[in-house]
Length: 288
Image (cartoon, rainbow, N blue to C red; front, side):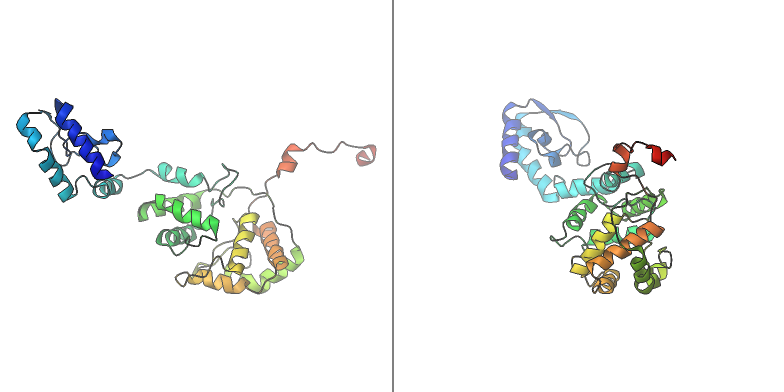
C-alpha cells in the first residue's frame, strides 16, 4: 500500500510538477494523505529547485536513499519529534482530566488529592503492562491504552504531582452499609496497613483511602476479590490486597466501604435527587 502510494506520487512529480521544494523527500508526499512523508528539513535546506530532465532521472535514487537511511520512516521522524517536544503541564493534564474528573458521566475515578507516590506507581504499572492487560477488566484495559498518551517518565511525574496537589473533590455517597460492622472489620482487617484513619502508610506501600469515591472503592474491592486485579506477580501490593479481601462477603465489603467513605472519605456532594427534586412543603405540624 505504501509502495503503491509513493510510486503514484513520484509518477505525478515526474509528469506534472514544474518545480518542487526538496526538503528531504523528492516531492511533497504529505499531500497524498501520508502524514509521515511531510517535508523533512534535516536532509536538505529549504530551496525551490526547478525540475529539469536530468533531475527527474534521479528521483527514484533520491527516494531509495531516503528509505535506506530511514529519514522518511514514520517511526524515525515522528518518534524523534515526539521526544523533543516538551509538553506543558496543562497539555498533559487536560487529556487525563477528561476521564479523571467530573466532566463526563462515564468516567474513571477522580484523582484529586491522592498520594503522588501511589498515582505514579499505578501509572507506571499501566504503562509497563503490569496492569491493564486483562480484557475482562474493561476499565483497566481502557486505562492501559489511554496511559500511552503519557510518553515518558517526565510526563508521568507531571501528571501524578499535579493531581496530588489538587484539592479533593466532594463525592456523592453511593454505597450503603452497616457502619458498626464496617468499623469493626476495618479495625481488625485494614487499619494495620492503611492506618487507623485510612491515612495510608508509605512504609507498607499502602495508599490513603480518604480520597476514594464509594463507587470506585467498592468496584476495586470486588475486583481484588474476584481475581480481576492483583494477580500479576510484578504487582506484590496488588497480590497482598487480593489475599486480604479474598474471604470477605459482598455485604462485608459494602460495610467496610460505606464506613471508610463516611468516616474518612471526601466531602459529601449532594446527589441528583437532592439537587433537583423540590423539598417537601412545610406542614403545620413540622412548623410546630
